[in-house]
Structure formats: structure tokens, C-alpha cells
Length: 421
Image (cartoon, rainbow, N blue to C red; front, top):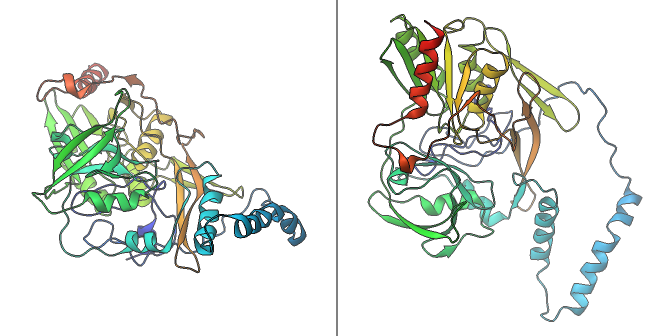
């Protein structure tokens, strides 16, 4: 497989997680990743190769001289000696102190996507799973303080149990998840179909955490769903930006366009992202030759990604549906469409995930994850932490909707019918 297929987006929004396997969306940029099966049965935690030089626009910051480092670290070694001389329980564990120092250093950066795994944690997260995978069926972000639900999958046990975007899993079967890396928490949620798992949920607006019991199941996730709606409106929903997504999407899009629709609805709700190449390919169906995104690195370098020529739907009236579960690659596509005025965004503010991480293994077999870049829309908007605001905001409460009721979809149809009168 070509190395460019292994370019991931935006640091850690995991798709297909807790379902038939772990979809490692968004942890690495660049290089061939030997231990990853993006959509298959044996994922592992990828270790990146060195980033290519992109041509610096400004010189990188100068590293501290050795004598400066000696002075800088003097208080650290003073504290080290005090602990060894005065701490009540001797002898102290030097390895634990060293690893705690690394963890504290990375925590001090204030970036929830930069962190440390000790060797045991890294080994568990990188263990290749065997056999089939079953779980609760939810898209999750493992890089927050607690494992966070991005969106339950349609018809999944997670959806049936009432889990919502933004729910934080703070305990599993009574075991506190505080301080546990989200990639390890995922392993605890996965389990055989038919078994139950008790999740303690922290939800915004609820005064106290509460328990939700979910019965695990085997879940098959489609890539694309498409149909013709009333009024000759074409509808296509993309569930994730995986390896097969560009081909599946293009095939479904061609079938819809062959029916001469008046307009097209692209549904990215609940889509947590995936491969960078897939995002570029799918955006290219709508934006012939235009800039899709800009990646900017800490040393001032940047890389610009442009749409490929030959898109199938560069002219048809377009509405894009988004919500709080639309993240990373979804935000790249939606942001490019919005910036170029190619279509109208309808729904809710998106998740806000726009940074890239790499994993680096350490000499003791532990690893650090470091944010190395952020991405921007064609007009230079940074989405990270804020998300995309739709052109037409329509927030819905799933608890108040009747079965098969979808006000956001109805609004998209209404807009397209007005545009094509």
C-alpha cells in the first residue's frame, strides 16, 4: 500500500471505535505505518517516520545551549535530591519519578492532544487485537480528559442506550477512568456481542454523573448511503473518510447525478473524520482545482492541499449537513465548501478538531504523542477548538424528535427547492 494512504488527520478523533474494530483516525501525518489496519481487524498504534522538509518560511527557534540547560534544570535536580534525602518512604522509585517528570512536562504544554504513555500502557494500546470486534457502536475522541462520545452510530447499542455527543465516560463497570489514556479506555469498552458494560457518564447540564448500561453488539458500518428524495433532490451520506470512501462516494455520486437531480445534499453529521487523502479526494468532487486546506507547522513551514481536477459535482446546487459530531476530515471538506461559497452549511457548530499529532517511541519503550501541526481552511480560519458555524443554524434535541423526524434534512430540502425554482 502506498505511503500516502497512511496520512491521517487531526490528532486522535477515532472512528469505528467501539464497533468491529478501532479506526485510528487522526494520529499521524506522513510516512508508512507498519502496524495499522485502518478499517480492518488488526489495528495498532502507529509510529511515524520523520516529517519531510516543506521549506521554512521563518527560521526555527534556537535551542538552549548546554550551559543554559544546566541552569534551567538546577531546581529540578534540587527537588530530586530533596525527595531522595527527605521523603518518608524510602527508597523512592526513580523510574516512576522519571516517567512522572515526562508526563508533567507534556501536561504543562496545556494541549490535551499531547501526552505520554509509559511502556505498559503503550504496549497495551499497541497490541494487535485478534479475531472479531464488537462493542457499543460510537464514534469517540480518546484525547480529552475522559473518553468522549462524538456521536453514536445510527441504530447502534450506544444510540439505543441514549448516549449523546459530548458524553464523557468517567468510569467503566465501577472502575474510575481518571488519568487513564483514552486509547486504553477504548479497550475496556470493547467486548463480545451480547455482554453488558456499565458506563458512568458525565454530561453537560446534568448535575451528577449517571450510569448507562449498554449491551454490546456486532456492528457493521457502511461507508456511504444515498437515495433520491422527493422534489428530485439527491441525498448522500458519508459515514467516515476511510480508505474505501473516495471510490464508494464517487460511485454513489455518479449514480445520483445520472438521475438529473435539481440539487444535492451532502450529509456529514456524525462523521468523525479519517484519512487526509480521502478528505482531499471527496472535496475534489465539489471544488475543481481549489485550495482545500492549509497545514502549518511549528517551525513556520506550511503545506497547501488543492482539489484534484475532474470532480463530478462542481456545479450542482449543494447543501451540507453538519452537527457536533462532524469532526476533522468532515470539517476540512465542509470548511472548504463554505469558504469557496460552493454550498450552504446547515445544522450545528461542528466538533472543532484541527490539529495533527505524531507518536514517538522512547528508549524505554514508552512513547510521547506531540501536536506537530494545525490545519486551516482556505481562507485561513483555524477550526481547532471552535468548529465551523453553519450558514443556517438549526439545533435539534434528539429527545424531542418523533421517529423519522429530521428537521435539519427538511431544511436542506427546503433551501435547495428555493434555490432551484
